[in-house]
Structures are given as structure tokens and as C-alpha cells.
Image (cartoon, rainbow, N blue to C red; front, side, top):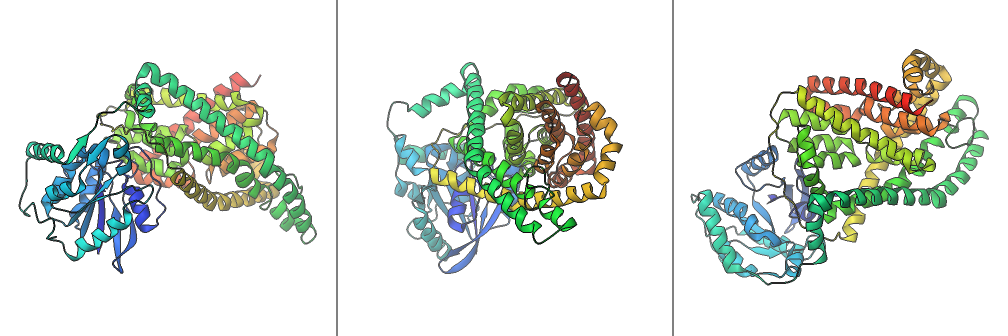
Length: 576
């Protein structure tokens, strides 16, 4: 049996999918989160069924690449469609519902966000709505699980008896309305089943108005970003000072003594290095574990918590609106904030998210600018770990430089690439207080994913760096690249090896700078150049998939040239 979840963007489909399948899906309170589809398994009436989470769409008549994907999945057919409807925006959601019903596939309507509707004074007669539509309607609260059991039971009943005698078929299979007729019918249905009571605006609703207007929204955005970064840095430093550093200090001396008593020479150097100093040894069991767990993780935990809170609150789309005018100057629009936000977590899903943009020009601009100027979460945590001890101003230098590069490069590319940059409409969801359980679960999923990917990569990076150092290759690479690394960028020649390792993983590359006794100014230059010069191997492969070989080659060539220019300017300005 095949079941598909359909609905408008930002109605909670991914949360319901996670509830039904147990699959760890990251959801957020802004549209366009899903740019592909997710498939899982669910048991319905003792029978295993396939459950597909379709990207959000407003209509079965596609108007964007995402809606085209959703329509293709829908056209493949299903035994049951679960149409997830936002109870707080019933009129807007029912247009898609009527289109689905016209096709004649057995359907169940999940009236989600039921609790939010009640708080807003919206009363919906679910039984009356079921009678109007001719299909079952189940009120649900996905984040708490309310109504999920009823939804599963109703899906089972609908699958076994598609033509439900209780509700009766309202639409014959050959029935179809024009768009205007359908909206008229939606208005009639809503007038009969919904009642809205007057009430005073809540604090969150007042904040919605304040944060969307430019004169108040921009200062609020600056304040929010400052508070978020300060909170991440302070909590990260606290975790390092109180938890990870004491643990790793004791661990490093113990593991160094243990390995040194059982191994010598090359094997000892590879495992723990020639010193118990955590950032000097390059050992797999010392520096290789300390970088991801002792340096990155303390900053990554508060980063993911803060990012998840802003996602679930619904604040990020408001930044999209505030930045829309600036984005248009570089050939993009406010919706491009989605790949940028995802890029703060990981560049791979961020590159995939450029599909939400309309034209090849916009996809190229977004993928290039985002991967070149927005460090991923682990890279950000490493930058905080390396520069946080010297003060916030050095971290600000890194990000101010990358923002300037984003703007200047975008302006130039927009003028050089003579292609259309069409508009796109972005839904602004209401503020919703994040569910603590969902927030912690999302953070757990992201941290687990980071650890599963980062620890092996960093271990391999340490192994390669040790081999490079022992074999003399690191010195040879440093000497051959000395005119670039030392003369143009003002960095130690050994930094060439870290730049090479950065292709495997950016945070590992930054971690390689730690034992080189750089000044904070040199660390700023190294962090900017490493962020800009080349994508990590995973991002590189995804870029080829999304932009093609030619587009990726142009993107990478631009990055290499820009990183040398920006690094040279920084070296001239910061290093006497």
C-alpha cells in the first residue's frame, strides 16, 4: 500500500511523517524546507505501507520546480492521500484539497495545528467539514502527537473502504471546476464550518508586525544576530572550560602514556604524536578526537539549538523579506535565504535547496555565493574555537569580510550574467513558540549526523597530515606554494597542507592551523581563505550534480581567484 502526504508548505507534513514512520526528519517553520521527497515505512492495520512526504505545494498546477516534483509524485498514484491542512489558514489550504478530491483518489484530511487555531479563536466544525468534502477529517497536533492514532485508524478504514458510506462521494471522478469556481466553493465551505471570535492580538502577533517592517525589523535583526552569536560563543567557551578541556587534558596524558608504553616510532606518532599536547600532536587519538569533540562540539551544541529555535519560531522568513531588496540587486530574491540558512548547517543540503529558485542564473548565483561565503556549522564552530579566545572582534572580521565578498561578488556576477531573475512569492508563517521536545530532537539528529561524518574525516585528516609531515611532503608543498601562502597571504608555509586537507573537510583544515602558532590576524586570513577557496569534497560533488561540470568549473575558478585577491588584501591590511 502506498500513502502520500500532501499539503501547502509549512503545515507540518514532515512532523506527521516523522510521527508515523519514526524517521528522523528535520522540520522548520518556513516554507521550502523539503526540496525533494522523503519515503518511509509505516504499519497500517498490520500491513506494511510506503509513506511518501511530498514537497509542499499550493496547487496541482505547478508554478515552481518544487511543485513540479510534487505533481510528478502525485501523478504516480497512491492508495490513500493524507492531505495535511493548516487549521489556522483553512481557506487558503482547501483549494489544494478540492483539486485532490477532483482526481478521485481516496483521501483523508489531517486538520493540523488544531491547538494553534483554538488559541487564535478559530473554531472549525470537523464533522461539518467532513460532510462538505465527503472525506474523513481528523484534527491533529503533530508536535505533541494529538490525533495521530485517530489519523492512522482513519487511513486504515479509508484504505479498506475507499467509498466511505458515512461521508459519501461528493465529487464524481470526472468532475472538475475552474480556478474561480473552486475558490467560490472554498469560500462557501469555510463560511459554513468555521467561526472566528474576536480577540486582542497576542505578544507574538505584535512582534510579527515589528519584525517585518524595515525601520524596526532591521535593527531587531541586527540585535538578534548579535545576541545569537554572543550566546553561542559564551556557551561554547563555558562548555570548553568546564567540561571538554578538563576531560581531554586528563585523557590525552593517559592515552599518550598508554600508547607510548606499547608502541614506538611511526605507530606511536600516528596514534598520539610525539607530544601529549592536544593541538600539537596531530595524533589520531589525541588531536583527531579533540578537534571534533573538544573544540567543535561545544560550539555546535548551542549553534544548533539557536538555529533550531529561530527555525521553529518562524523568524527566518522575516529576514528573507527584510533582505529581499538587497538580494534583488545581486540577481536573487528573499527566498534565496533558504539555501543560505541551510548552508549555516551544511553546504550539501544548501546546494540541493537552490532548486527552489526559478532560473539557472539564480541557482548558479545562490550556489556559488553561499558555498563561498557561508561557513557550515562545524566550520563556524571551529572558527569560534580558534578565534573566540582573542575576542569577538576577530570573529566579526571573518564574517564581515565574507559578507562583503557575498555582496560585491553578487553585484559583479549579476551584471556579467545576462539572464532573467524572476520573482518568487514567499509565505510568511505566523510566529509559533517552539516545542522543546522537537527542538531537542532536531538538535540531537544534527549533532549525531555531524559526529558520524566529522570524526572519521578528521581522523583521516590527522593520519594524512602525519604522513605528510613524516614523509616531508608537507614541507615540499609548503615550499612550492610559499609564494602564494607566505608572500601573498602572510601565512606560515605549513598552512599549505591545511589548505589541501580543507578539500576533504573545512573544519579539519581550520583545525590544522591550531598547532602553527599563528597570530589572531593570521587566523582571520586563514579562516577567510579556507572558507572561500574551494568547497569540501562532498559539496563539490553535489555542485556538479546541480550546476553541471561547466557550471561547477566556473564556480570553483571564481572562488580560487577571489580567495587570493581577498586574502592578499587582508594580509596587506592586517599584517604590518
